[in-house]
Amino acid sequence: MSQIKIKVTDIQQLTENIKKFEFVSADGGHLPSWEAGSHIDVEIDEHMRKSYSLANKPGDTERWVTAILREENGGGGSKYMHDKVSVGDELTIAEPPTNHFPLDENAAKHLLIGGGIGITPLLAMGYRLKEMGADYHLHYCTKSKKETAFYDEIVEVFGDGLTFHHDGGDPSQGIKLDDVLGAQEDDQHLYLCGPGGLIAAAREAASHWRDGTVHFELFASAKSDEDKVEDTDGDQPFEVELKVSGKTLSVPADKSILEILWENDVDVMYACEDGWCGNCKVGLLSGKVDHRDEFLDDADRENFMQVCISRAMPGEKLVLDI
Ligand code: FES
Image (cartoon, rainbow, N blue to C red):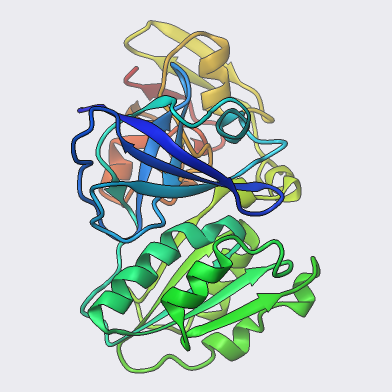
């Protein structure tokens, strides 16, 4: 793994809760190249990494731009970035930008739907699609114009291929997903990024779209407290045995394996705490897992699990390779 040191060159308040950050290479050289949809993992502290999508023109190796929503109830990463990081500070990136949300550049048409801070990878996609001369349209959902990050830049990049949906805080006044997603055009692909509720509703409305044409990235930052409560409904306690450290730990119904590992000083890297970034992947030696992540494929699930979100199946004990 090759760490990268970056320096903060600009910070701007885009909305009441969203700040834009610009970075250059701390050594004055070029940054690694990257594609639309990529994110960087910023090392907040020894145990915490946070993933932030890049929002500027893909392939820019002079500077990277991201935007971060300050989460009052989050794990602390966004508060650290908002409250502690200043222009001139250096930060460590775990590895070159990685992309779990790529564009299918061979598709004939591209439909993008974003909510709130989920605009960051979609803006980078817009730059790339414009450069390609592609057929593309963005539907961007926010509460109001005032709470729309990157407003002028979005207008410039998406031009006529743009619809804003300002719902004033009432989703029933927002985007009509059944209308927008009702008919899939020939070779049209869909890209979704934003809060869990929007992604779930859009995936449902696009359930008739052809396999492999719906791409999404969930932003944990926008997940509501109600979503979090729902997730733990009906969960049961179970045990995990840690083969390498020789510990056996009890995981109660209302806590994740990751939380129990922290409490017992077992180091596991993490970022999203929501099953999509891949950072908390650990080896699975035995036991049946209730996989709840969006990261592992079926083959990986034989031998790995994401400990931030996945649990043991009822009555199972898990043996992990840590
Ligand atoms: S911390 Fe992101 S998948 Fe677990």
